[in-house]
Image: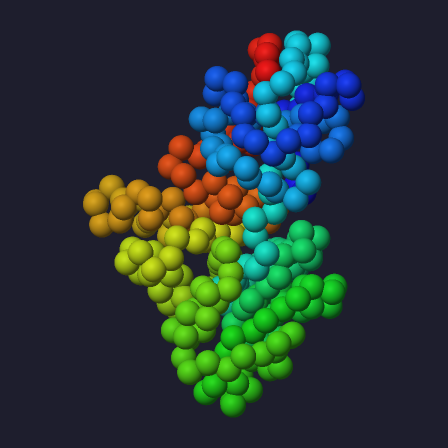
Length: 285
């Protein structure tokens, strides 16, 4: 379980084990089998009743928690919602050494979070760097590669399980069936083809999965401006634009994708979630 939130501590004698949802004003209380209690603002996150995230439960109303139990913290509980991520990016390394270094960092972080990888096959370029890092550190990898490319051996051998498809279109089609989110690394025409295929599918309602742009050294700045202009000119709906998430940093991008996948509603705000400010109130359950 990944934690990022305000926390409270309650005495063992006040512990109540239940999985019914309970809200106090705009707050929901969540705890696990220890004495730690987690507080979420309903304006940020909405839990359906009877939700269970591994060992976390939504509590019932039965005890009181006073001011003295409130501790300032910097974390909120966030479920691991992404099990499989789809990778788009170049089969070349590019001229900026930060691209390669960040691709390796991404592979390590995917392994640390136990997120499996699906990618475009091969062992070269930025995609190969991520795939080799995941595979060589015990992670699970699946590659989808068009048959005409596999036959020519352009990208070299694929890490993990290799699946041959008829075209790039079907590569993204197969990826879309198994992943919970996409990550896009710097790349050229083929990378942009994949990205805009996903954009097109989102506009047609064929998927609503978050797409993370790993904006290494500002590589995607112009693309982000283009997407914002699309919204301003009424060529793209705001809810479609919100599928595109960007960060300069690997860990923050994955945090944002986890949040977007867990809480896709229009009122959810990662910025509020990550920076909740001081919680200063007395709760009576």
